Each structure stands twice: as C-alpha cells, then as structure tokens.
Length: 364
Image (cartoon, rainbow, N blue to C red; front, side, top):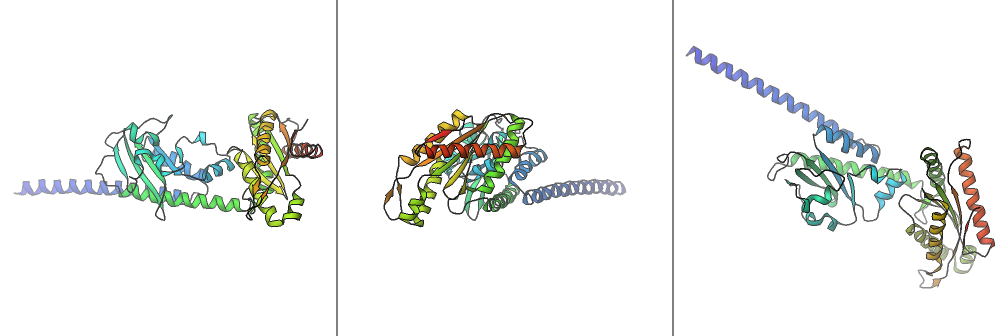
C-alpha cells in the first residue's frame, strides 16, 4: 500500500511539473504574440508594418512563406508605395488585386479561413514566383467594416501545419490585428499626403514635387539613373476663365491633370505647380524617353475636347518643356541641380509657347 502511494505521489508530481512547464511555455507564447500585436498596431508606417509581418513575425511563427494580398482597385496603395520610394519588386510577398475575382477559385470562399494542403491551381496565385510553394496553407480573409480588403496567406513546409478542421481562432485574431494595423498606417499616410495634395485636381502640389525632386536627385547620385522633368502649361488658360468662367477653368484643370496622370507610371511624380502649370518628374528616364511621354500627353489633351458639366465641349491644348539630367556632377549640390533642372524645363516651355504653343520642346 505504502509503495503504491509513493508511486502515485511521484506520478502526480511529474504530471504537475509537466503541467507547470506547459503553462509556462504557453505563457511565453502568449507574451510573444502579444508583443507582435503591439508591434503591428504601433507601426508608424507601411514599411514598418511590412517589415514586422514578413520578417519578424514570419521568423517567430516558424512560417516558410507569408504573403499579403490587398484589393487596390484605384491603385491608391500602389501609388502610395511609389510616393514613399518603396519598390514593389523589393516586396514579392506583397500582392495587389484590382477585384475579388482575381482570387481565382478562392473568390467567394473567403468568409472564413481556409486551411488545406497546397494546391497549385487553387493557391498558386497567392504564392507567385519567385516564392517557394509551401506544403500547407492558411488563407485568412482580412476585413474591415464588413468589407473584404485582402487576405493574409500563411505557408508552411510542414504538410500537417495547416489542415482542414483545425481551430482558427488564433489566426483569425492575428488577421484582425493586421487588418486594423493596415487601416491605421494607410490612413496615416493619407493624412501626410493631405498637405502635399492640390485639392482642386487631386494631384500632388508644388511642395510635394519639390521635396520629391530632391529625393530623386539624391537617388540619382547614388545609383546613377537618369531623371527627366516636364513643365506643362495649358495654352490660353486665362481666356478660358475669362470667356467660360472659373468653374469651366476648374473643370479643364481637373481633366488635363487626369489625362497627364494617365500617361505616367506609378513611379513618376505629377504636381500642380500653380495656376495652369504642372510639373512631372520621370524617374529613370532619359531625354528621348521623356520627349516621347510628353508628346503622348500633348496628343491626349489636344485630340479630345474637354466636355464641360454644362454639356459644351472645349478644345484645349498644352505646351511642354522637357529637360533631363543624365548624371549629377560630384561637385554640384542637390539643391543647385534641382534649380537647374526646373529652370531648363521652364526655358524649354517658354520656347514651346513662343514657337506657337501645342508643342513639345526639349532643352538643349
């Protein structure tokens, strides 16, 4: 009897020790994930959030692959990345979709997390090359205010890591934190851009372009890529205001801004410099390329009249001056180079207007 009690006591002590050890282990996991929640929520920028998700969290959670798919039908987030100088090629884990149908066979099934063995046809779009296909996946919808904004796609080399029927409370919690954090950083970037946006046309303002020009000249010096600048002026704009009224003038400004923007890449920068003048920065573009883009812009404005809210149409044209900086001299300061580039584009614009308007002139 005594021997049985001793054995039972030892068994209970061992079981208690195991329970305490497991409790401590679980507590450590909880603290670690609470720290990640805090790191996500406190991210001050989109770059910080992506770093936390794709690097820190992926390592801590022992995940082989994490991708983030975001619905971006108006290209707003992608333009934001370009404005922040973040290259999409540096984030292959960040995927953009214009509509929910681009989820492929997953579209319409994202009301709850989907855990399964990896299937190329079903899950392949969420793990594009050069990412390595995982063995098992968890596709977790991201929602804000009842709307699907994307998905968090977790991948593991362990085929048993994510299996149908497993509890999803934890990853749903993580997805909700990431959705909130995404909304926070995107709204934060929007607020920063309010002071850098022209309220009438919706494009950037002079302050933004001047700041961006300094940044791009710095990159040009470091990496040796070319930088081109366009100065664009709406021809006879004062006459439009005088004969058709300022409301018509505002409509023309908005329409011309939209047509210019449609000819540019996400990496380029467009800003209203004041009045009827716009400035465009073409990143990694030499003079011959910049002149081609300028000519496309000129044609897009001249060939299609602007339809006013009144129903009337108005023929509009623009004059464009183009200047390029192939290399930034070591002795030249960024400030001096910026002033010179803008001045040469402005001089080319003056010549375009003097030569009869509705034309493109490249600086000598």
